[in-house]
Amino acid sequence: MTVQRVLAVDDEEYNLEIIEEILDDQGFELKMVDSGPACLAVVGEFKPDIILLDVSMPDMNGYDVCRQLKANPETEDIVVMFVSARGTVEERMEGYAVGAEDYIVKPFSHDELKSKLMKLKGYLDEQEDLQKQVDDATSTAFNAMANSSEMGEIVNFVERIGQIWEPQELGKELLSCLNRFGLQSNAELRLDDGVQHFSLSGGCSPIVVELFDMLKTRGRLHEFSQRLLVNYEKVSLLILNMPEKEPEKHGRIRDHVCFLVSVTEQQLTAIMTKQALQTRQAQLGEAVSRIEAQFRELISAVNQTRSDNEKVFRALQEELEERIPTMGLDDDQEAFIYQKVDDTIQRSVAREESVENLQAAFSRIEQDLAKLLN
Image 1 (cartoon, rainbow, N blue to C red):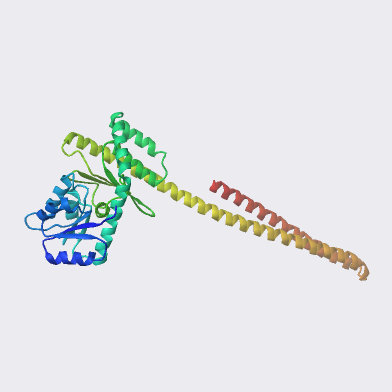
Image 2 (cartoon, rainbow, N blue to C red):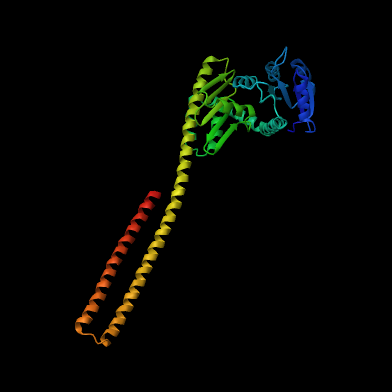
């Protein structure tokens, strides 16, 4: 879907002029109105792709306008981005509760508004591409719910995720399980190497991502309107359509959701621990390989030295046996020289035994490292 039409709604003419200046020459067809009623009057004919909606307006504020837009089947799919001078968590939550997809705080820069619009364009494109898949998945999910109890589905989920060792698959399985309960949801998994977001429509809207970020450290449960947000250390889940008008079912589903997020958190921890161990195992394997190579080089050098010593002593012995008889020495002198040579050879033999002991020690170290690696 190519975003072409933008409807800007603000009771301040100056703010509309700023929006017009920012979007000039950006390829948008821009229409501007100065009130909530005027927005509702022109939206059906103009058919905007995105509405930039001021929050604080006389007679009818932006929240009320958004409620009416989202309650009308003909306008419920139009993307709404609130424009407000205030951006507290409570105001953003209220904006999300009435159905808005994004929120921008005044004053904003040219680049910030353009960036927000481009993100919303990507969000619309992704929703359109995957809408058919979502419809098919939803139909399949409701059929599956008719053939299994809630607790049976939870047990099946726990069994399935026990076989999952990739965070991407885990996030998809969680949303698929909730979809079989008839629940629309978004999830955030916080990994060592970054954050991943999941939605059955393909991607989370910008305002959902902001809510995850702002509320992840503010308690385990947040309930507003039909929404339920559950926070754990590594997993956050946002349910979009809790059964608000059925208190008993609402409480039961809330308990189910909290349990599902809890076991998802445990499995994600197991996945991250396994990945960390695999990384450490690979690093240890590399270290062992380097140590083994160094051992082999050292043993080779020791063996070469021993071989060289043997050649030197052999040559010396042969030379002495050849020359001593011609040197005119008496028996005691010859015996003295032979004794010195023999003592030196014996000391060399003793050093060779030490070398053999060193080689044996190296061999035992290699065996211990191999056991540790395995």
